[in-house]
Amino acid sequence: MNPARPRVVIVGAGFGGLSVAKALAGKPFDVTVIDQHNYHLFQPLLYQVATAGLSPADIASPIRGILHRQQNANVMLAEVSGVDVARREVLAEGRRIAFDTLILATGAQHAYFGHDDWAAFAPGLKTIDDATYIRLRILLAFEKAETEPDPQERARLLNFVVVGGGPTGVEMAGAIAELASRALAADFRSIDPRCARIILVEAASRLLTPFDPSLSEAAKRSLEQLGVDVRLGVAVTACDAAGVSLGSERIEARTVLWAAGVVASPAGNWVGAETDRAGRAKVAPDLPLPGHPDIFVIGDTALATAADGKPLPGVAPFAKQQGQYVAALLIARAEGRATAPFRYRDFGSLATIGRKRAVAQIGSLKLKGFIAWLLWSVAHIYFLIGFRNRLVVAMNWAWNYVTFQRGTRLITGISGSRMEDMPMLDEKQPPMRGAA
Image 1: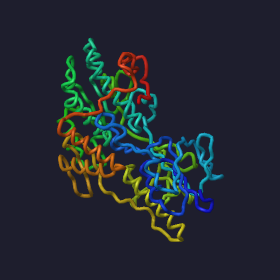
Image 2: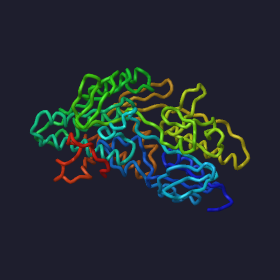
Image 3: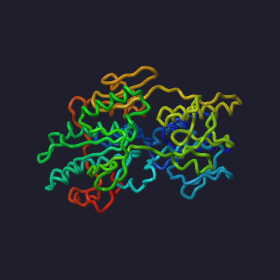
Image 4: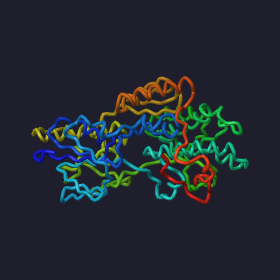
């Protein structure tokens, strides 16, 4: 590190944080990237890991590998617990990392709307550990059903409830339906996986609320064609190891998955920022915290607004554009130039429902079906980091498309001889996390 150069500390190596770091390559800054994981994760494809379509290595890349050619960048594996604003230091596992400029890009976490105890029974999908754990639960449910003599318990095992009708929930429900009806259809003898019941629950009156209503309806029809039972306008009122309650209705299910909402990381509290109900820190038009021109908050952690005052969406392109803007702002400041406020360029929204099924909204253009699915596939391959990941994912999808097979149907993290002891199959215990 050069003591004469500004020290830029980036907390979080997601889309936003990594965009800042890469855009500062070769510039007169010393960059330190801190993350609690050693990899950058392409979160939009996590659901494919959770449903045995891809392996974790297909959608993640080591941070050090991404930045290894960048001489002014240093990577630190640590969990940040706070920021000493007065001393301009980041607190991470007993260490203090000094900064001249701080960028907080720490993302979001699951929100259970005041029912945090539900997390034990309805895992969400934010990390690789989440995805491999959900894959474990889904595949174990079919395996246990194969040898279950009690018809009621077998039915409970073959019921899958997905809570939340946003892109993650829609994609997850469609993927489970295709896994059951295609990839697993011929693998069992005592059960027919095609009889699995997938229920998608959404409290709003339609799916994919940011999309045009016509696309929401198209997504609903596509899910129903796959056999998904779509429940709109109903909310989960109770959740336990044996299922969920929707008001007076009870759905017995051993596998409940949560995709109903997120809350920002606690980074806003670290710096004493004003936050909204979702914990997002309110930022100025050029993205620093008001009163702290050298502390920036970007991505899911930030509450940035458009010209009309509406909050900007928490999606990957938004975080990447913010990261690129902050890097350009820092370079302009170093060169004594002024910059315009941040402006988000909306390139559209995409969501896939399954094989040859997707919806896309790009400005006034609305697409659905195979063309939208092709666009979704190309866009996601393009935004993956690394040629290897792009090639492997493209080959996997081509293989899955031709054969209807999913190549990563592996149960790991629990031995087959102890399958009956898996907590998710025991009403008396909450599920255990940490499967690899």
